[in-house]
Amino acid sequence: MKMASRLRKYLVMGSVNCDRDPAAVLLEAIEGGITAFQYREKGRGALQGKEKFELGMRLRSICKEHEVLFIVNDDIDLVESLEADGVHVGQDDVSPGDLRKIFPEIVIGLSVSNWTEVEKSPMEHVNYLGAGPLFPTSTKADAKRPVGPLWIKELRGEFPSMPIVGIGGINCKNAHAIISAGADGVAVISAITQAENIPRSVKQL
Image (cartoon, rainbow, N blue to C red):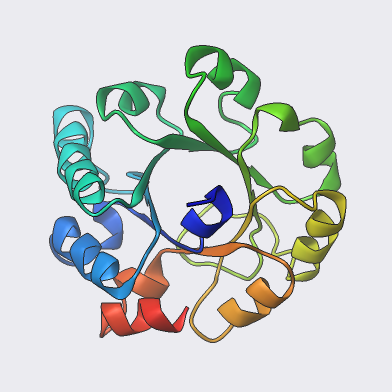
């Protein structure tokens, strides 16, 4: 499967985003049809150390069994110990160029929210772009100002063959606009983790 297809329905989640066992949430999301999963254990009350690793192992095992792309958010140690398929980084994290030296084969995703960030980023080492935040989001306390679907169109015009995932404030009602603007996929947290019916919500994305 091509990288763009594997990013179509992309769940980002850690224990702080769930009101029950994250493994159960992940399984329901897989039942609904997610194609990629990012382990993002951050925020108030997030697991640390051994507990963070052990939850990661459980979620990694589920993704492996169901052939869902498993990506770690910005934690180099976990990339190796969980044998992740990839890592996603922001502008203030480890550079994709440095990551590529350490991990020549893995998938590297990079968040970009404006042209200044794009211009200073080593695109030759990036496998996909996380574009956003597109809409206001309550999940990330330090989120930047929303840039809207137009940002997807601009990026697609500049990078016709680069896989692009829309991120930030995406739900079942606005996901179609993101795909129509040129994104290959949508990354969501609460639209899945807080859904009354997770499989149905994934199908609607």
